[in-house]
Amino acid sequence: MGWPRIFLLFLCVAARGQQDFSAQFERIKAKATARQLYALLYELPKGGDLHHHGSLAAYPEEWLAAATNPQVLKGNRFYTRLRFLACPDSVEPFLRFHTIARFQWQQLSECAKAEYIALQEMSEPQRLEWLSAMRLDRRGEGREEFFERIVARLAALGRDPHVLLEVMARYVLRYSHEGLAYLETQFNPRNAVDERGQPVPVDEYVRLLRQTLERRELKSSGVTLRFLYPVIRFHPEAEKMVESAYAFVAQNRDLWVGLNLVGREDNDKGHALRFLDVFRAMRRKYSGVHLSIHGGEVDSPGREVRNTLLLGAERIGHGFNLITDPDTLLLLRHGRNLIEVCLVSNYLLEYVDHFARHPFVEYLRLGIPVSLNTDDPGVWESNLTDEYFLALRHFHLSWSEVVEVGLNSLEHAFLEPALKAQLIARYKSRIRAFEAKYSAPDWETKLNAVQPSISGFARRHLLVGAD
Ligand SMILES: [Zn+2]
Picture (tube, rainbow, N blue to C red):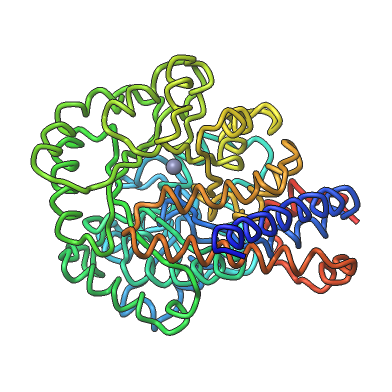
């Protein structure tokens, strides 16, 4: 038999393998309990999480552990606001559990200082309240609670580089346990301050980051990390920030791969076309700085995605209202640009009132590349398994669609080509091993042996009343 025939035979066997598992996957979906399905998706090899805000990704327990650990704090200390005493210098807004660093606390009057307590001095009930204040876990909490309160409560913790890098190490390990291959997260290297409130020089910040990435547990986690530089889109100086972000990324290309525009899109000060001139100017100066930009994370119909593509975005964050813009929807069927879908985020921030009404599956089945992502999993108390669980439950994904979503997330990663090819090859071989494992008739026994880490979101929303 000549080589071409052997190759054809190989292709037939490979296609049959997928077809065989497709049927088995449908059998498992039909028979598995909710908990077994969760275990299956926890074990599923995953590609990349491409839409991820690095400072809102840690669970509240991880923040609290890092921010009360003297070895992490290196002399710093954090205080949280428990009560309001109407002091002349009481800080507005009156936000309970607003957490600040010692240098901020020291600037307050004795009266205002008494509104705060050191994190390690909280009682158990106070600790539980603090944890709850950092996540969307109560009825009625939504967009306002997230953007206007939780982000403010956590801001100072995310500016301490030691605390931020410690929680990053924790969540990378969590992702590793659910089979993630690649994390592209948003880190602003100019946001950090030291324990005296002085800006941490960017070189020092990068050195600390490299040191963390060298930790043995991270190197053996199987998760490759790259970073995007986030610019707050409605900031008065946002154009200048884009310029300095380009300069930084161009000098740190082994870790930072591009930029993102972040912050609520319903603030008109940050509309996409404001940035057209600056991105065009930057493209005249730099090559190879990638752009993933939030676009269409709004309630109203509109052309936000089209305008974001005009800025040069290769990937679109959310793309939620793309469904309302048929011309741009058709344009995206050419398949060059990926939509970073975040199901849990869009639900908790009230862009969609029921998962089944999310446009994700319309994009997927029109052939537009989509990936599933967690966005701010620390605040949702979610994980990537939850996103797959929702996609399966509400849109009945076939096996080939599940694999396609994972593959998309690697093919559209802003990773250097050789390493990307390696991650894709590894993903495919892990998928084959997964198919082999669960093709056997004893799949149920195997699933019952899996011990998934069930997220708080899943406990509250996905597995309520499950067996
Ligand atoms: Zn986002």
